[in-house]
Picture 1 (cartoon, helix red, strand yellow):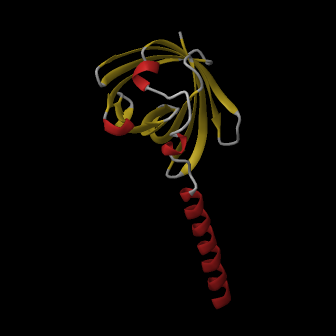
Picture 2 (cartoon, one colour; picture 1 turned 135 degrees about the horizontal axis):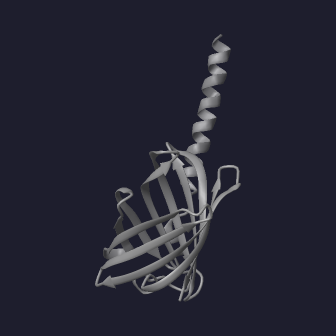
Picture 3 (cartoon, one colour; picture 1 turned 90 degrees about the horizontal axis):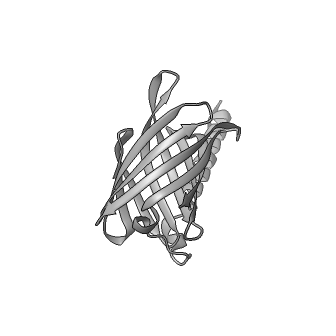
Length: 181
């Protein structure tokens, strides 16, 4: 029995070490500080944009495709991103983000279905954004966390990849491309 406890503790220690090491190796927004073109959210998310995306479950299967028509504007450091979603199943949704630009590339954002505030940071061509979304699923609402990365490719195109999870367990990913008109 003591050997079994010893092996269980060694196994648990190995798992925890692996988790901690992988957390340390996660990309940081400042890893992209020298990447160009430099993203300025107030410039890119200003005017009308089209977006095309899909949601994949944890196995990689495409669950839903969608398009988004975005109307965006800024007054100083305050921005509004008005998103109209059209999903492949015929459903629609609207989300209106209210963003605030702070010093050193920091941003906060609110929307009606976002729990608390989203926290974001821009550096180089990248924007990293984390938030909790109240997501309707099968007649109930669950809170899921998003770890959202955006990369400016050129003056018209930005790519977006967001991991979605709950209690640290991955549920799926959202992949999106933004095209500025």
